[in-house]
Amino acid sequence: MHPLIITPLFPPAVGGAATYFRELTTHLAQRPEIERLTILTERAPGAAVHQRSGKMHVMRLLPQRVSAARHSRLWHSVSYVATQLWFWQRLRPLVAQQQVDLLHFHTRFRGKLFFASLRKSGVPVVADLRDQMSPVAELISCTDWLLCCSQGVQQFALAQGFPPQKLTLIPNAYTLQPPPSAAAVAAVCAKFGLAAAPFVLYIGEITPNKGVYELLHAFDQWRQTHADVQLVLAGANRQGDTFLTEVASRTGVVYLNTIAHAEVLSLMRQAQIVILPSRSEGMPTVILEAISMGAKVICPPNIPEFDQHLPDFVLPAVTPTAICTMLEQVWRNPARPSYPLADHHIDRVVNAVLSGYAQILQRPRPIFMHESPTG
Image (cartoon, rainbow, N blue to C red):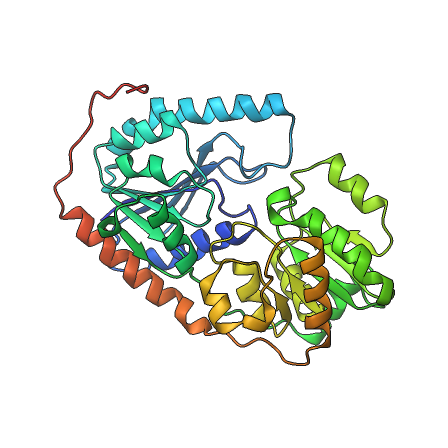
């Protein structure tokens, strides 16, 4: 079979979604069921537009939008329209030209023209839901199968009315990484000037939905009794000067911008706590990585798997008071979190995805060949 996987986030982009789609596609391409595998993603400065390796073909043809750093509202609007028009005009011809058997898309892509393009593609459509923000109701009419990366995401989709018979829980894939050497950790910490003091680490996009401003306010309060501890944040800044001004006005807060994945793992290895106070996570790779690096963690709320396995490390709410209280609780707790990472093994995930692909390819499906984008 020949899947076309559509995601705005794919290496060299960084973050949990980019890591997931890199691991998924790499392992799918190794399976005999996959004859060809095409990835359609956003353009990336310095990266080849067409990149081929064995069965896999990466096409960086889409306007850079989700993977880009923060831009003006005008740029945001123009890039949204350009992306929608690209899908409406070019997706169906691309599917035909490449002889694609099915589409598998990351639900960060949305919009009326995009959903209409999926419906008129003529092939089965798989939606990969990785958060609790996407417009699930709009997915019903254009999706043959919905993948949910956690119990919380599954509950979210069902609550929004998605048909349970078209939905499957497949845990977020995670490939266990070997811990960096002590020398590598020391070198990374020295590079960023973090060798002398203990620190709390945040890895992720800088957006209000990730709870970064609540974290800053909580750290102000908590640091009154922990003056030697720094707060280190790394990730794409979607807030621009608003966030940088907040950081500059504080003592003990360091922002590193986007850093390499190997550097992330080294910082996790050294951090006293890795924290993710996000409001709408599905199953955050950051937390899985931090646990595998031996770090203590503070997890976002509303993720049943974390409530079950990590009850002493889960935020009850994303508020400065709750974050401050949890920082103190985890700081004083000598225990390290234990979580069943084997549930997320990439082979299990790939087996489940391939089984689902085979099933939907056998189902009859209406083909909307002449759909209006407003219909």
